[in-house]
Image (cartoon, rainbow over all chains, first blue to last red; front, top):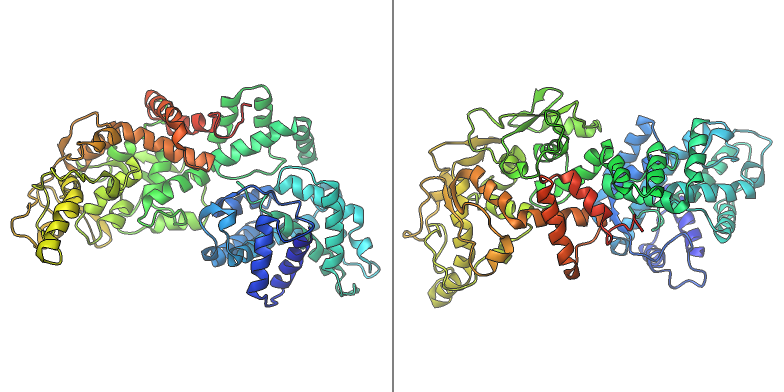
Length: 219
Length: 382
């Protein structure tokens, strides 16, 4: 499961422009695929060979996330078009290269950003995934627990898996998501200026981990 | 609140039926749905009632089936690299439009139209330009949803054009395979895309094969000397005899200035231009003869119609009548829906699906349904 957390951090670093050593990426990709080299193997990821068809995949993500805003959709496809040469047109997940995974994360992140934006604009009860995340800028909410409680994250983990994988999250997975959420903010102090960004980062990173998991990318 | 109710209605169904519905939809229509989707709930309900065909029909009736799944089915067939990541072109839209139910008959149009049909499509009642792909590229970039309302089939394929052969004479296919070269690629790829057979497989390696159709541009001793002569005898002519004899079907076709050209009675100059061997065959008209009928090719193709003809249309008709045409469609649909190639133990299933496909009037929608519901594919009925 720690590889998922590594991926969560990787996604965050990648999205913020940090340079990642390719060797590190190779290691992540290998563990992502095989589940080996890790005492605590990932649970979101199936061991099955996942047939891929990437244009379908991107369209599936859009449908599953119920993203209907044309600007968001165009941005997702712009991102996909910019990176699609790093992805095979079809094949199996085991054929994905590290640069393919990196492209996958970035496009998945774009989808998740759109999902987060959509949900943040809705009232809690009308959201499908991040039901009790507090996306509202509020200078008084300066803890992670106040922005996205452990229970809110556990619910979000379950909802993300329902939406993108089609099954419920196990208790172990929910626990790992809570741990991952804490790690996303590792070393970052929540302030009045960044509290909205902090909760948004948690939402996008957790979502991207699910969306780019091998189980989710099976069509 | 509506969304919440739908979610509850899906959740009220067995997880297994919802999962099966998602899988059935994704494989037929090419995309996964939001778990709140009403279609998913309807399909899951039908699956619980063991009404599997009706569940499959929900996916087949969706816009996604035409715009995502069939796009991906036809796109690789439309280009030389055989990749799906291409823009919309007339080959793809004609394949999609031919799969729409015919409003005049209420029935599905036959898949055989794709190789011998005389039809074109209009987008929003406008003909597509013959010398550019702009309208379709714009539609693709705008993510226009193609439906029978904005994508319609009309005849003929082109004005004063008696040799329409479905997708084989589309602008896209000619652009890919009649640009430069000597039109052999048109035969090569017609066989690849609709008979699932590459020239390397259907060449006649029996050295008793004659070479009367091998044209002048084929060197009879490539590289010179006895080794070259031997190479021609054992390799070159085994492909060229079977391919060149059929290539004549496209003798009057060309692709010039970005547009298809048909010159009745006039052989495209490029075909006879190069002379490597003066005594070789000279193409004088579009009459063709199928020489791929001996030995393994008899079983491979299962020809069932005339083996000679004039022009691309009759060649397409020969392809369509072959047993291999149907079994090739089965292989393609199976791989598309089941995401794996049929294995050698599934020969009987392939034969059954192929014969049912023929009996069903070569309905591509019907074939998708049959394949998706076949026990070795998605296990929806288990």
